[in-house]
Amino acid sequence: MRQESFLVIQVVGYKNAGKTTLISELISCLTARNYRVATLKHHGHESSLQTVGNTDSTKHHQAGAFMAGVRSSSEFLMHIDGAQPLTMKQIMTIYAMMDIDILLLEGFKQAEYPKIVLLREETDKTLLQLSNIIAIGAKRDNLLQNTIYETFSLNDLDKAVPRLADLCLANKEI
Image 1 (cartoon, rainbow, N blue to C red):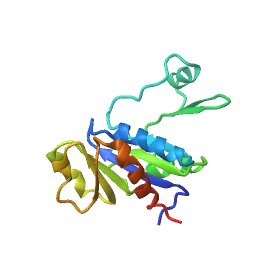
Image 2: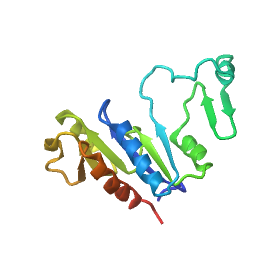
Image 3: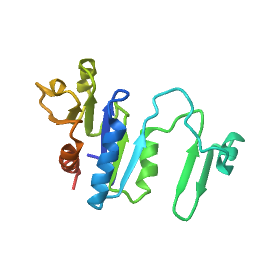
């Protein structure tokens, strides 16, 4: 049983598999259906995350602030730094404070949420060992053969995305 008050769906795949493109299309589709959608991307590199230029909050962070935020009348940005990364549970607590219906995770392959897996090549099929797969997408049809999962073509997102949105929503606990 999920503890979040919102639906969480993961989109996973290796670099340049189409994750960001698919998530952007899902966001458009779901928001058109009046769902409030949030996202969280896993940055799998050791390099630092990009900060927003020469702003006051960036200066606060560079001066050593553990947490630096900036709020306008319509936006809120936060940079949290520290020796210990936030756990998925801590991150979900932050998202739970927001009035969202759906959280789309880009990456976080080992998390236990329903997953849409994107394949680029045959060797990517190792991702099919992950848990909670609900669909598989690829640009090449041969990568979608002989599978027990729902499949879709990344070459025809206009057709695939509404079906994927329905599939995602079917995973929402009522």
